[in-house]
Amino acid sequence: MALFGTLEGLPLEELLQLLAQKEGALEIWNLKDIPPTTLYLKPGHIRSIDQHGKPLEALAAKATLQALLQARQGSFEFIPGAKPKHPHRLNWPVEKALLSTITLQDELERYRPYLPPPKALFKVADLAKIPPEEGFLANSLPYLKKGASAEDLSKALGLPLDLVRFHLFRLERKGLVKRTGQMDSGRSSFLGQLLRGVRP
Image (tube, rainbow, N blue to C red; front, side):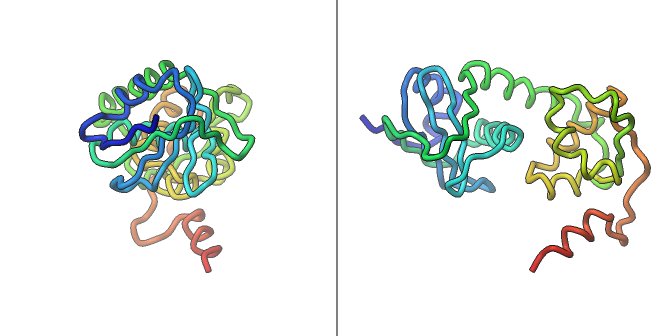
């Protein structure tokens, strides 16, 4: 049986708990600043999170889930039995994904006053110290080797700016990245120039 409604009437956190033991596709659209998104579910797990018909990698999927949990406008429909047509799988336990995403949002709000400015430049401090589970740093490493700001990384990785600032804040506290200065407002960073150079 299909289920449909709005996030205003049924927020995603409650919706996922309601559908936790179902299999199918939860399609969400009419979202502010978020493209139409499909969450593929199987009993107890989020199989994958798709946008534009393609699966999101773990880092982008987590950021999207975080944004969706905060959304209070948008429409949804659950299509029972639907499965993704691609082999990519997140296979996140629903309860664990909800808890970690909500915890991340709480931490972000708590440390918001201490987050680095969007134009502060960072470089990786010590490649030998990078733990294997540090997903954000692994994805941003090509840019941080040369120096990049939160603005640069937000554009390059397709992640929300505040989330990138929070990741850089945590990495700086761990000594994995170091601040090297501030990007001139009138002068583009190396990455900014590079991104513009590849645009048609």
